[in-house]
Length: 323
Ligand code: SF4
Image (cartoon, rainbow, N blue to C red; front, side, top):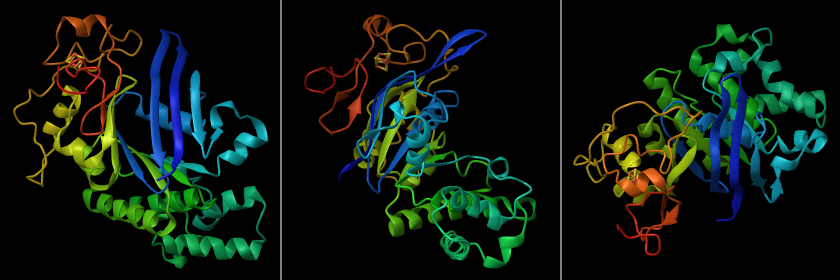
């Protein structure tokens, strides 16, 4: 499948009163047309900063963000605004994503009006179509956001994101503010929309069971870096990085064919400060398999025989086999 998104050497650093915060460090990843890449990791690992950098809500410090070959990292002004139609974002909290004074119709119509390409009757037709696509009854068009349930509000946010016909949506914890029953409905909706419209998703979540449900590929992030990335099957069945193994071991497993990594030690402790990341492998302060080399030398992502990539000194640099 052709690459829709190609991210190379992307870093995001914030200047703060405490010093420089390394939110994202030299990230490489690809996303194919119509596919879902799940991005997982603990809170504060840089997932959201990476998502925001991809839509230029925060500016990358360095690196490339190519969408259909155009590097969004270098765009500004009108060209950046136009490129935003291709990549939309859905956030965790639908209440703060919607203007409380705008009706549901106006909320969905706003991005269409801003583009100025459709007449009013055409926009009315498009809003009605979008409401249908996300499973909202047209009677809700005149309501205000506070008159809707949390699940309905998230459907409105998704309809807004779909309005410019994007090739890709960054979904940042889109169901974590919802009840479990509503979570399943929104996840099913996202799957249906992908099937109908061929949209690609970068799906950011701290919850592996959610990612397990819908991601074709998985990327694991730790302290600003991708430590493992690959197709769903080898990843779930043979996670290679000790951090991935620990994350998977903590998930309640419904499918007995998936690895529980039950023999692996579950990690404790907190994520170290991104202001002063550990030397060598950033995971070495919590890794049950740490050895001397880990404290000195930073591991690079390398291909394993299973086809996925891992950054860990336990694997030989040339064959990808355990060292
Ligand atoms: Fe653990 Fe060393 Fe691998 Fe890092 S490089 S994950 S510390 S074994």
